[in-house]
Image 1 (cartoon, one colour):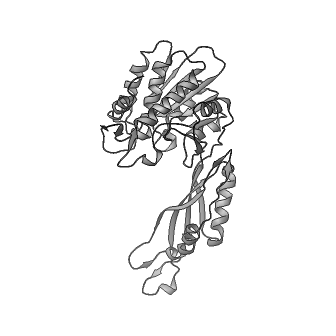
Image 2: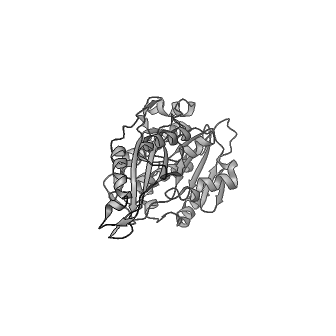
Image 3: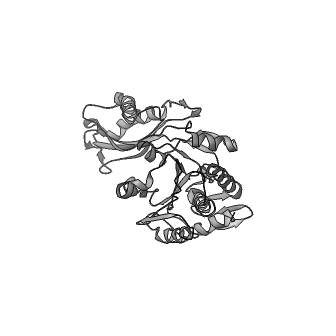
Length: 349
């Protein structure tokens, strides 16, 4: 086994902000092409490598190559690697690359997918482009997504949706505010209700999910001497996978309805569905039992939902700490990288 911390550092040292991923794709492709027996397809800067050994089952490993913007470069101190993308998710990419290079005769066929633009809007996501242009390359019985989970299984994911709420008012001069209706003031009761929102915490397959409702942006106002006649709120809802998107949307509208007037508007502007845990799949139960892996719910949204929409069960399993992703002190430790690698070697062999 290679020094996975050093391999992660090498990947961290290759800048790969979303849409600027050619160099890292070139590097990964050059490494994969040295492995005999792999079918390699490159579509744009998305890479797919597949074994074709004729086994009855296929597991797909997927990881995104992009990072958010930030300071580039790695630094290793003892058994800890610091640097942008170290947790999210170049340590996961290092595990995938090492597996593809060293486990060349797996007991199940394997597909390795390195894809672009996960950190930006979904229409740029490399998985979606791969599915449209060469969907057969993504066929599999199960998927392990290398998102950071600190070497534990994070099952499924919560759905996420955003609403735009427009509250109306009536414009007036601030010297005579009683002649108008202040739309920003109207937002007060609605903000208070959302602040006191009682979240659901359903347990599904032993995984406890935690729903949330948050105002993430508010705007309004015309000028310093005008009573505003409109304010706009952007509201985000995270919902557990025991609800459909339609049920979640209905729920949010029921929460907001008492604070809206007939002329107000509420519009669903963005939605990414939830994904069920699927822990009963034999490949996942084998992975969990072989290393006695801890299991918990994925509260954020990940691309496991992309596969779930297409009927392919998926879990999140990677070495980075998800709470450090995108932070100024992002880092990853050697232990979880090696633990993740050994668990996946066991799954394949």
